[in-house]
Image 1 (tube, rainbow, N blue to C red):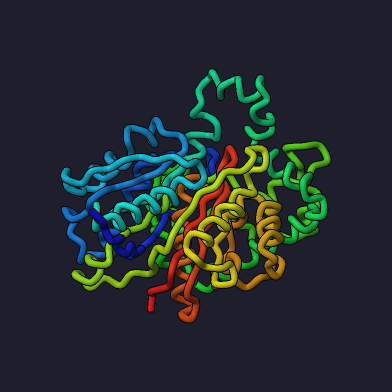
Image 2 (image 1 turned 135 degrees about the vertical axis):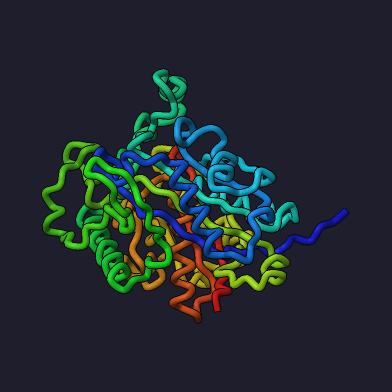
Length: 399
């Protein structure tokens, strides 16, 4: 028996604001699963044509899967958000690419004909669950280091960025700082233009100072300058090149998408934003995990028959500036000011709540497709802890 693949569309996508992962961050007293509930309810409210009972699955990612990010979150958030009990759910983990994996999984289910409508995305409450917390007091398997399976630096994301600087000494700290400042500038311009007004879902939250409305990211530093970055500490290595200024932050936030089949889009008269063309994952040495988007992008291009030159827009998660610089060099892009790359700013400005970032990239790309109707293909890509990359290609159908 043969089966024709069905088209999978991203119909809508939104997110909470991204807060700082610290006691005075505006999500410090908010549960991670409640942030996901807010996103699901917003997606359903914005798309009333879709009956809640028609949701075929709820797929949600988190890196640390216990506490307010545990208990098979895809199922619990479906129930908490008021979806019928007939809606199943599951949880996935691919660290930083968790949300992207959830959305890709949704696309696969739809493509295979196993589902017509799915809510999918990711969340990370890094104040409640700092990186590495999930391995418990025993820590990772000691064989990783004792048998020299990986370099010890692979277990520290900041050190992996320092390692990329070592591999590419011509990618200097000054270049990383310049990239970071440009990311902040693009983010400010996009915020001032109101490009995120229909992406960020305001959420009323309880804080140490009383009730607040979280409706704007806490991370952006619009006044950042290269000069101000010169004196920042290098926490991962004495005399290093990776600083808080040229890295993404530690953040709390949720982001998710509503995915639907072509049949459901036509039946309900939905207006999707983009069509999934293909996706790929790839592995690299864990101690240089930031290089993961390079082979993942190469692989998805090969599998879809497209060339890098066919990509009009690229949303690359900026875990660290040096990782973005290596990507620019690998694909011979036109430097940090290449018009295709992160036109609305990136994670250095907005933050990187791990598993939610893939869905944020989708939100940015969907907005860029809307703003650039002549653009045909776009890429969302991330590096992943322990040496991986994820890349998904989308086609603009917003007009």
